[in-house]
Length: 178
Figure 1: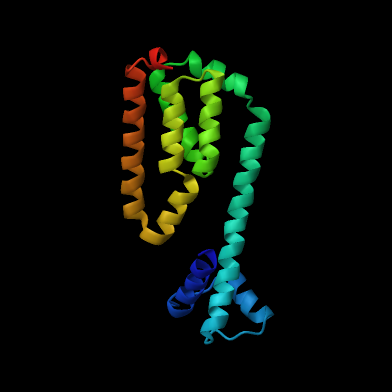
Figure 2 (figure 1 turned 135 degrees about the vertical axis):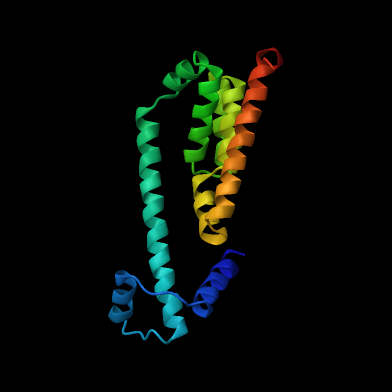
């Protein structure tokens, strides 16, 4: 499926060329001796250019996450979250979930680890919901595919739903159920 998706992306770029090039794309065309009129050359140059941009963002995010994992210990997180105002705690968990650019297969172990460490359930669930609905890489992809209006409406709606879910969990006094 991945190869099929990459090929369809490659072909869609080849067919839908209606914009100008950046300096780097012009340089790539010149470097390989390709013509702008050749749709295959256009697709290859756009693919290489977009791949480079995605990898740059990936490495920056990976560096930031590694930095945070190194200098922000789980004990400090547990102590801060367990003594914090629930409204602020939910907001911080929501923002941390937004910044966590991981898939659900990584978010579940993080969620279980937060619960095991004693972070309140409402904060842990808010993180889990937020990281699933508001994954920053998904939002950036959605922005590129669907445009700013749709992405803005989706993001604001997801933030509101996540915050309300965290508040409901905070009001349920969930410690009796764990």
